[in-house]
Image 1: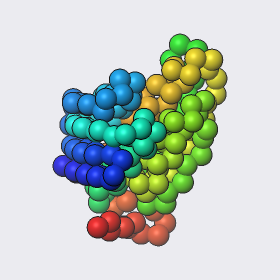
Image 2 (image 1 turned 180 degrees about the horizontal axis):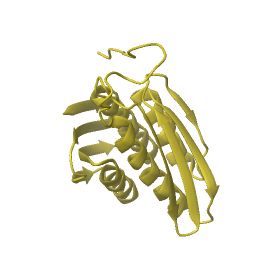
Image 3 (image 1 turned 180 degrees about the vertical axis):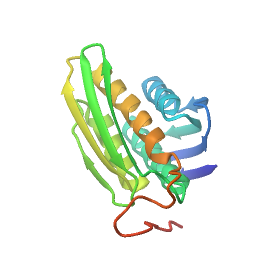
Image 4 (image 1 turned 90 degrees about the vertical axis):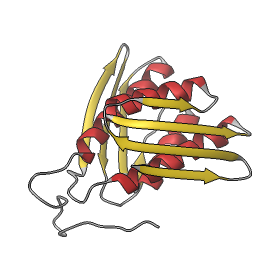
Amino acid sequence: MSVSVRNTRETQIRVEVVPGTGVSEIDTSIPYLDHMLVTLARYASLDLKVTARGDLRHHLIEDVAIAFGASIAALVPPRAKRYGDRFIPMDDALVHVALDLGGRPYYEGPLPSDLYDHWFRSFADNALATVHVRVIRGRDRHHVVEATFKALGASLRQALAEDGAGGVFSTKGAVGLEVT
């Protein structure tokens, strides 16, 4: 289990993440964000609990991404496969997410929503992950963003899986980073 708590003058966030079956309890006071996190948890096969309150929608969305990202960074097993990628079609949208949990934060987008593009950047920075999002097509912003959360979840599921070969796949040997 990984727990992240983020309390600022603007927000109060608590995130609990456990590898599991995709069961979630989400209460951020933003229905669309709740929906995206439920979707992500399901596709990642992570049991996820999030409680969040804040002053502004932007602050709340950003700080949930920061806390969730930190929880993912702490959850990476020593023998993680490390890489994941997935194409997700959703109605008019087709999105591809590729990620690396190797400890090098980088985000490449963009998404057609500034708030959720910022969510993905904040997640990548705090998960210490490289995240590339390609929106191949899509007219409906809801479908594009939702397909991206689904693709991130499926990619996380791959990357967090333990590799039977032993050790994190890297030419550098074991990749490790302690976050305190």
